[in-house]
Length: 595
Image (tube, one colour):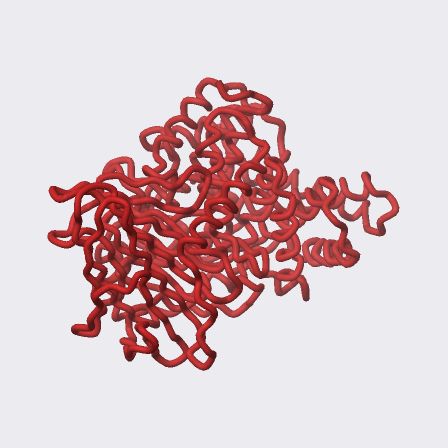
């Protein structure tokens, strides 16, 4: 039986990251990058697809307690047994292109027998490596991958059934440290990491980074935890931020809505950039802005909705039939076919992001405005096309209202940039005409006057949670009756136990997929912001408190939540959810100090 998604905590080194369960098992780890093949894929299959468990020997069971060390990504997991108590501390120290997993076992009380069970299975659990000994270490090699395992002090270790076992005892005050290190198999082994020094440095570095956060309002702890999570999802060599650590965690248990989120989406750009700048992380914001500029450079007609960690464009989608899927949710997919979709909203998101960066005083880039002008030229000529929309539907293109609103955003930000910086060249009259024309069309074709609400696409009666962003992006003021009507309609028709779904899946929908999905957490945060903007501050805070209460015991959020089953759904941890949490806190508690 699979643990719940929220039973996992995250450790990472800003190149990749691992999921650690309450039972002490690392069930997901891709090496050496977020988007590499997993060497531990139990999350999407079974034990034989790879995992690494360290826990008291005997029947498997969850830990007694666990927590991150304050303001860090260093995880402490403790077990109380009849013989005593132990703590396992998990971390991934940061060093260039040589990812390590460090696991330190400490005796807290009594004398406890501990077992380590390591099953390495490269290429998403499909390749069993050849294991050998070398200089007192265990070495696993398969094709391009090599992994070294060592312990300090050395403990009894043996191989059996293509698995590596270690067993030892610890008493109060004693400790045993394990280090798992990856490198390309054709390269020599990298220098050894001192596990205890790595622990000390990691704690100090994470706490120093967290101390830079300027947010000092209510719920600061969960805001900082969300920012740490965004940092953990950052691929530091390029500055790109992946949407989630995982692939194919389902939006419905047993369903087919299983996608690979280990890539960088342009839709996240403005919201992420704004959150980072608002709380004092200018360096990270500039790295993200620079990634964005590199990724979108080229022919504006070729603008994609997502890219690889370094801006790669080819992300071919395929299925892995040897993996049964999380809780039987198949197929398991890698790559993402939505990369080839047309989504007009990304032009607005890119223009908004670069406008925000310029206004915030970030280091200018000489080619940035030329790129923006090229994007606007293409958009002026092609904005009337139908597209697949924000949610990457696979049921055909439509005239999505949110997409057209974001076309308006692109034109609006271009005009505002020229008004603020008149020395720049551009086509202000053409862009003003585009802005006005799109605004008129959306208000005419994307609005249902009978119900006083904007609609999912032109001519429909369906709703979409993306409409909650209309006041946030400035398309209409929050006190406009059409905005208030839209917020009320989305809340009433897409709401579920106070949370919000993206759109209805109960009737024939535009996404072209069978089954259902949970409430979308980012959309629920958007509702809280919309309630605040429309003058319902108490209701907004009540919803925010509800959403904060959905974080797991270590402060993490998945993509969705099932209010009926009371559990997380979708890929995890989800950047969009944590960005929503940070931005909602900034909106609701602007200037307010923690009580």
